[in-house]
Length: 201
Image (spheres, rainbow, N blue to C red):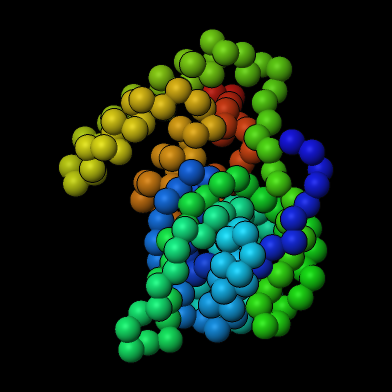
């Protein structure tokens, strides 16, 4: 991917880390966030979602959010009856990083650079396939310990053949605290964390 950047509305999320490939919906109540979604809907529906570092920060600035988030498309928005809040449905597209903030009012807008996945020379096809088999086996064990896990989630994991999509799907669907999920979002090599684990034994 080239080094071009996008100027996008930015929404800071409380305790929620969104991954590429995610299809989720959530309620939005802060005026700045609602304005950002309206701006996205008025253009090409593209928005940048990033998690804020502390969930109790009411008016987050650039220093209060993680630099790496996800460039997403807004599928639809719905105003909740009798409330100012809106419900949004989004699809995560790819990782992005805040380069600079262009404005903070009436909503945050920033220059966003895409973050492509990277691979090292040792990430051969056979090594990646072996790592994926290990990950799928461990997820199978995880599913046995979490009986309420949807069957279609396990089928998606077993059927995925691309390492980056597999790692993002699992990271987005397992129960982890948001700082731990952010660590996974920050990782640009799908074999990176596995490689660290292999090196440490």
